[in-house]
Length: 267
Image (cartoon, rainbow, N blue to C red; front, side):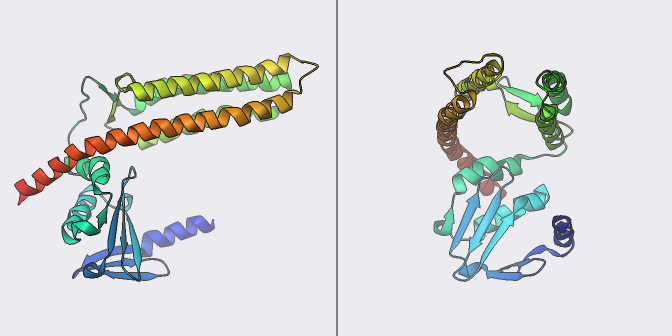
């Protein structure tokens, strides 16, 4: 309830004003003001929604771009990119590739058209992919709860249901274009490896329910297996993210050139 009240207050009273070479952030309780001439660091945050951190000697302001419409996001990015000296900016290349250039290309009226190595993700597609899994987890959870007398197994469909709801409502009505998994060898290998590890882990977990080995304590065995399994999975995730990040850094060079070409043509 407290969080809900805070969000309502933020919606009504929080604001961001850029005027007269100043940035004013009005929160529910605090008010911050930054003079653009005194900003010592601008850090571009290349998260999916995008963010901007501004810092002077005494104040910090973080701009969350997801709070604004697309045309306002683009205006803020272009304005700060032009106003703050480039040596004081960090992380622009990756931000340009992930956030800024897609904002400039965005056309709310255009229907997404996938290329040969891309696929159009729609809400109906998520329904076809995930609803059968939700049904499978529901039936499996009910049977497992009845077989092993464990009522907590009835919660088995909650995770795939939450995933389905998240993907469905985060996907635009007209759909969105995404690269096919088969077109990215590193991602395909990562998913196959991770899926295989999870399958082996679950197989052993279920198998120990039916097999009792006198010389082996099942609980201790699963704890040891988990302690070995988790670092392997995390290391694989780290390696995959490292490769993906390197690819995006290479692609960002082209994105920066396209952005600068667009600025030149608009001038």
